[in-house]
Amino acid sequence: MDLRVEPWRRPAHRPTGGEAAVMLVAFAPGEVLPALELAAVIPPDAPVDALAVRLHRHEDNPEWVDGFRSGPLRNLAARELPDLRPLDEATCCYSIQVRLPDPADLTHLQLAWAVARAAARAGAVAVLDAFAHDWSPGAPIAALDPHRPFSVMREISVVAESEESPGFGHPVHTRGMVKFGRPDLVMGVPEEQIGDAASILNQLASMLAEGHVLAAGQQLRVDGDTLKVVHYRPGGDIPDVQLIGDGLLLTST
Image (cartoon, rainbow, N blue to C red; front, side, top):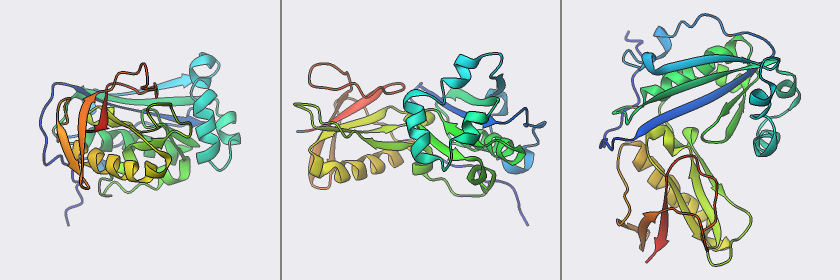
């Protein structure tokens, strides 16, 4: 029986020269992460040389550690974690980072999550996907199946801003596409079209994760509508949604 972990593939990969990056932050009540034994839970060709795991003690650098559990990220944690006390009582955290040139597969994500899984199994109480702005309690991360299929919605967030911007509408956008070496996507729509916009962004995010490329100047035919792709540059009527990395704006023609 072949128990090797199959890589998450990008069947439509077109290299762009960009960089893919993932950063997970695992909070723990102490120094819990043991020596990593990952061979059985990652694909054979996962880029372990690009992996950086660092321990950050609160007593040594309180501003760095607390920066991930305060402000807007704390508001997200309050919505996504069942109890904030374990997060607040954590005395340290581990940063788990992988950065590499636009990869032909997604084994770097499998690698990062395998380390987070090891940390959670050893006692980490909460894990933040820093680029997707997504929190998870420790238990679901500890239970991750190394053989699970890829899901783009596990890797990114699609956010609908509640405040409407005059001349633009409600911003609906992705967070986390930098994990695939691709730009985040932004749309501005009336309130009644937020659901449709989120569906479109989910479809396009899946295509980009597979390796497709979108570029400024392209036109897309989506559900009978034509969308033009332009560079996302906040200013004027275009609100700043605080993306991490580059963005593309989809506008109706």
